[in-house]
Image (cartoon, rainbow, N blue to C red; front, side):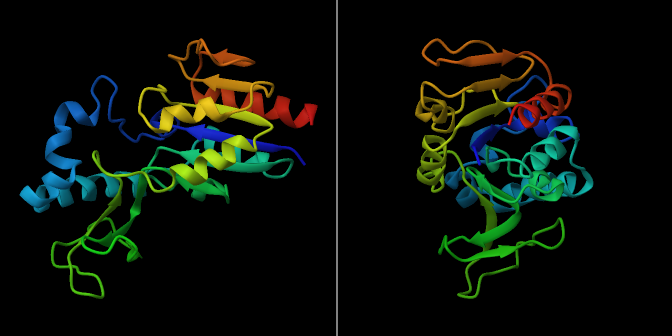
Length: 229
């Protein structure tokens, strides 16, 4: 059974109504990165950071997976599939994908502000400032902030190295180190880049660019891949 690795970004979730961070009208225009998405911001104003992510969590809980999420889940009936996502929502899980690597964390989890390995599910949208880990330290969002390491990157690279087919969906390929994953895909394997702003990547071979939204293009591509398998 062939292995498909899918690398997804905010574009796939935007079609479910989840606001992006970098696009026009995105969250970074309303909330500067330095105020809500860095370790320094947490130290300076943890209440603001907590409120920002509580709002994001509420939005995620109200959103539903779209046709693109469901199409990717359908692939698992015919291929070994790993989804590597920059997104912090759980829409891939809710659509039925079972093997997911979250590069930038998960909004539906919290972690100890002192012990990163102490991770807990968040059952409601609001994480209170009075909530602490089992060692008594405040809980913070389980998110990889700017300036922090990306712990899942090594695992993601290993998955891409093993891919027989590589899909890039709903991402600008501008956020590093995640965008560098495309460099680890073998030259000879087919690659597909789906995004309205997608364009050829000079050094990447066997790349098919599909300038459409994920919800439009992915169901069609998935049907094609299954038919050809």
